[in-house]
Amino acid sequence: MKQIALYGKGGIGKSTTSANLSAALGARGLDVLQIGCDPKRDSTRMLMNGAWIPTVLDLVREKGEDGVSIDEVVREGFAGVRCVEAGGPEPGIGCAGRGIIATFRLLERLGALHGDVIVYDVLGDVVCGGFAMPMREGYAEEVYLVTSGELMSLYAANNIAKAVARLAKRSKQTCSLAGVICNAKNMAGEEELVREFAQRINSEMVAYIPRSRTVQLAEVHKQTVMEYAPDSEQAAVYRELAGRVLTNDRTSTPTPLEMDELEDLALQFAEI
Ligand code: SF4
Image 1 (spheres, rainbow, N blue to C red):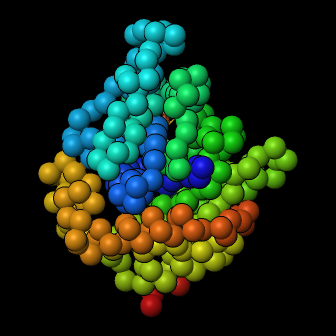
Image 2: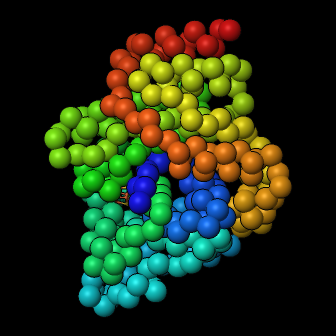
């Protein structure tokens, strides 16, 4: 079983990437479980044709941990992907990881943490107490950083790389960096910049996802690209990513950059 986690700055497209990756893996006939951890609970929405599934945290609050059944938390979506939303507190409160801890505990008790691939779609806020939880507890074995070429998203990716490096040093931990996914904003020199960034942090760019109108169209139809436009170029990109993730055996301990190094790098490519 592969346990992968996608991390990155809020709004960078982690959920879209995760959902399409899960859909592409599911379409290959694999048993996939996608777990979203975000109070917005929109990680799995496109896999569920726009339905908001109940969150683990809400169900546990309402019924107590022992009162929740597997069918309430795990919902089957497109391509047979099993979908779970950890949920979280009201905006501005922060749950310090309670959402994701409760989710893991419950899924383990219900025997739902199985399959060929588990995809964790984790809110990329480094200051959130729950952020490192999937890595610290050994659930996120292979971490993918989702970033564009914008400085702020590279900055977030670099910060996450710091967390991975710190956790990878602890003997018990199994997490490592598996690659960088460029979710492009279509900036000049972006692909080269992200590829260079990935190399500098001792990793590699495993996918370049171009900005595409098909993604927005699929979204307004409440579907993943894999479902809405399976023959599109964008769907082929996600399929390729799925293949890459499945065969990827190059993981590393990242070497995050200093802030001025990161800024110099961004400047260098902005001026090309
Ligand atoms: S664990 Fe963190 S990211 Fe997840 S819901 Fe709680 S505060 Fe938010």
